[in-house]
Length: 214
Image 1 (cartoon, rainbow, N blue to C red):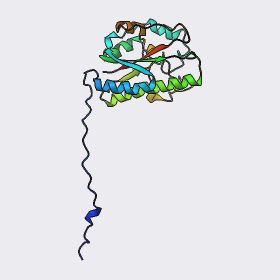
Image 2 (cartoon, rainbow, N blue to C red):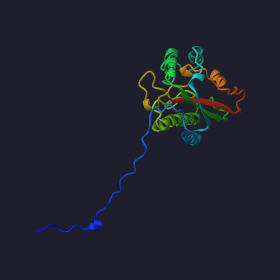
Image 3 (cartoon, helix red, strand yellow):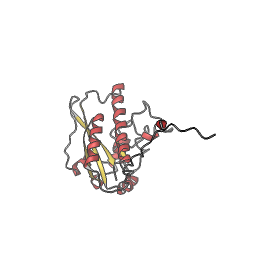
Image 4 (cartoon, one colour):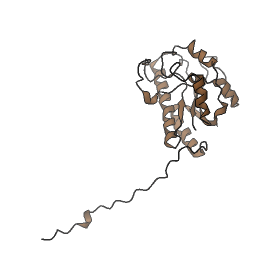
């Protein structure tokens, strides 16, 4: 006996998937207006008001910044995002020499209880930290494989950091700006950006993160 005739109505024809343009890594062309606009839009979710590309040679680094971490900050030797768990000045200079372009991420906040160790503040800090790391990942997927975040403020992903035991969130572990020996005020001056210290609790203040791009 011959084989039964096939019911052609039941045959599904699958169209060939549309090929996407391959991502080009290490393009060394800075960042396009299109990608910058995408970052701006996503950054608004995390309180960012502006994202500014700049040349890495405008970043000012100094050993004295580390003193601010050692003396006067409770996170020294207590947090994976802070010294001595982060690169020292010599390492920082080598790392920065491997980059040409960076992004300055600027946010604003007006909270008279920002200095308190509260669940509300920690929730905001965790959201911001995860947001900056997600922007870094977005850049990676756009072809910036060297992108790495330097985040404002100490990591608060855990209520109490596991340091010196293994980090509980290694994929989101990043250095802070100051832990990278970066003189933030000096860097802003190099970029012709004027800033000031908030003198009153009810004043709006700015905070800054940096993403080393390529």
